[in-house]
Image (cartoon, rainbow, N blue to C red; front, top):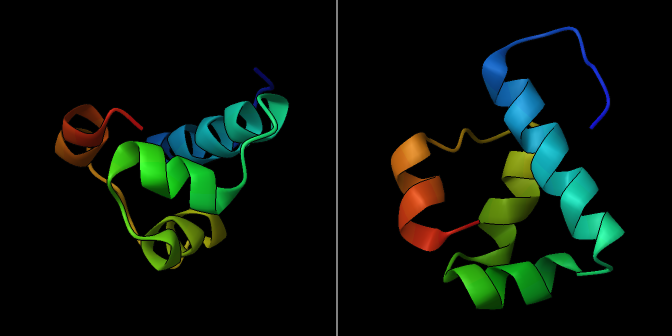
Length: 61
C-alpha cells in the first residue's frame, strides 16, 4: 500500500479503492459483494461520505 498524508479514514478509503482496482472490481461489483449501495461506495471513495469500522466489518468491504 502507498503512504498518504491525512486521516485514518483517508488511508482506509485509499486502500479500499486501491485494492478494488488491483482486483479489477468495479464499484458495482464491490457493492454487490458487500451489500452496500453503489452510490454509497462512490461517495465514500470521493470523500463525500464516511465509512465506519462497523460498516467495514459487517459488510466485509
